Image 1 (cartoon, rainbow, N blue to C red):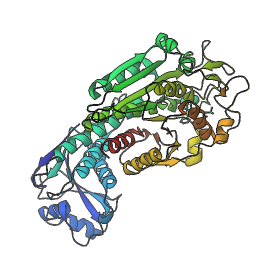
Image 2: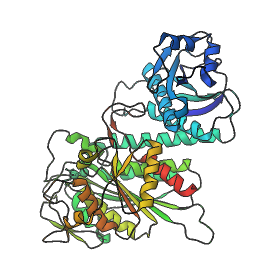
Image 3: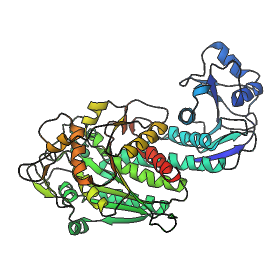
Length: 499
Ligand code: BES
Ligand code: MN
Ligand code: ZN
């Protein structure tokens, strides 16, 4: 989808749908709303007077006024003007592009501002929202609805310098989320670890990153016993995928810091011999949502400009299957760092993949390591679906991540890493078990297991099993995998490197 900034009056621009944001409860109209009202001889005033549209954040009204070249006009509520922020603008733009798609409008013009005061953040949020609202996973739909081909952000006066670039950046960031959603929505049959590596190759290329893919022989040499064990039961062999984006400019005389982002890449999780129940197993195609978030971050990097840090993405990828070759409960495996693990539950496979990835990360002497994983069903038991779990001993990193999530609408809730949980993960026959027999505190114990491998690193773990699937349609996300974490990671990295 093509998203551009265009200078034109609201009345003069021909398009399938013209969307105008209207703030709630203002006695006098202003900005784009006022311009529209004047051009249409009061279409907006009439809608407000009828009382069916009040400008609340969820309000929309479709009108067909004279006086504009647009085929139709959508009034989109922005909520109270005093509370208008990037989030609201993103959602308003998403609401408009979603409606434009449903209407088969063909082209959309967003009139968010008439003044020359349009700032970069607003323009970026609008562009991003327009891309997100429009997205649908339609790869297997025979009757895929006609997509929007063009989205324009209309400004009446010349916009300040930088705004056009902000629009492009917003579109790139939105498209990166769509890419991650498409990956997580792809059925396991069509996204095996090898296919995931092929997709990573495209992303790496566009991000200026070097891609390395370790196959089974390479992982054997490295001693990645965990990834190998999880992947052993499938005809689709496991892969360990590394994206390495060097720093553009290091601080004078210093080696640039390395930031490592790890994403769980289970392309399908049957549970293995500790088989999952049949209900809802099909959802487990999205068990690579953590890795999709990593790829989404890399796809967003071109929007961040020059980076003073090296960014490394690590994706341990496997298909967790049942077969005569599969790993079994009771097996003892050895992680890359030498730790031995008694596999008490083959369905606790994600933490095994992450163990090898964390061990590999340590060799890169990273400044910060963040992992994302659809790790435990227990996460949604603990938090419901309105936050992902954040585990970290590093208060600064934790608050940075929480702030980034607050800004992007990807909420994180801090969870405990108490020593007692680690004690519960000790094994009688090996160093650790991958799952203890009790189900209480399931996500905490998974995090405690990971902490064994992350020790001595500045590390945060995000358990996104509670949030990575959208159950009720939102303006900016349809039902299904939603690429939770992409925008959060991008925002966090942006703040980290720009301050
Ligand atoms: N991929 C699942 C976790 C999951 C469950 C994600 C539901 C999204 C929705 C993970 O591999 C898993 O199976 N975890 C087990 C852990 C248990 C065996 C300790 C779980 O949550 O039941
Ligand atoms: Mn599992
Ligand atoms: Zn899993």
